[in-house]
Image 1 (cartoon, one colour):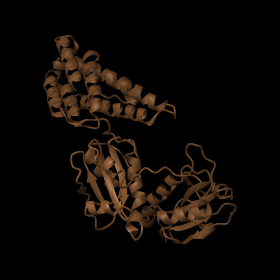
Image 2: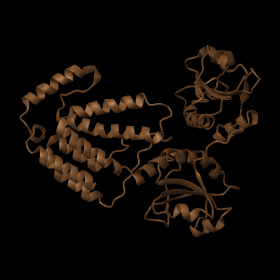
Image 3: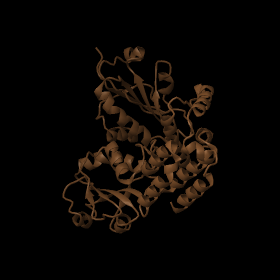
Image 4: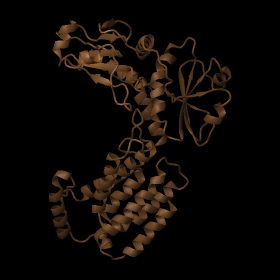
Length: 415
């Protein structure tokens, strides 16, 4: 009967310079090549159904992330359900089981310590000390810079109060908190910070901090601080910030399909596809609602308006063409392209998907997929031939088009 097994092997591996260490899937063919002694290796034998292995997985990925730039460290894992040869060879009967290979050693060493990020890092540093300084995304505050950062009315600040002497929970929280800071490091209006109240007791007293760790949230309008009272887990913290700031970040810093989009403009697009005659009124409502309001994606309102204008002139096929062009730009973009430029392309694709979805909802028989491209073009033609001209089609054909275009440009300018 299988039991939960997790074997961790830190190993040195020849990898692409930009990728560094990776969580390697090892098997009977590659295992000896990786653990030949030229690098430090940690290997995990695991089974997918084991709750113990499942709990270990995010910790494993966090350790990999910390040592991603190390060419002399490899993190590996073996699927014990698929590779019975290795399981038999190492006589692993309980899971998780953890082995490590110090540099210059080809014989596996059983790991019997705690399954925590701190314990794994301690093991690695003992055998392969870090000679580089990892990038830290959490901002450390002190009595000198505290007000400058927290009281900035242009910033949202998540602040952790901690002490370094007797707070085990603070030490346990920090790796997760650092992941949250990394997630939002490209958001210029969001700061994830912490302050040591043992070193700066006046700051702790100022906010009535009596226990640690304690997290408070400072908005642009509320600098007294709002106590954070939900779970102090990475996903929950990221969801909280996304909700508060209308951002769309995935844990680790990636963008979700909502990035760049604005609910108010999405609604206008949906109505636009149905009837262009009402879009002016809806756009005016959005303009009035957003007047004086700060939104992280407000600069993309002009892109919405450009697309409304261009579709009115050139038709819906423009949307599919724009999506294809942007996706090609992403696929062929050089690795040196700045991250903010890549994210700009992703956000534009997300917005175009709103137009695409709205059109498919209005004309459900029409398909855009690559596999049915020709069929889709035929159905578009048939649908347009059968349907009576609606307001949208009349505008495209020229009736009142000049007035509409002028109005769209006026609204875009005001937004």
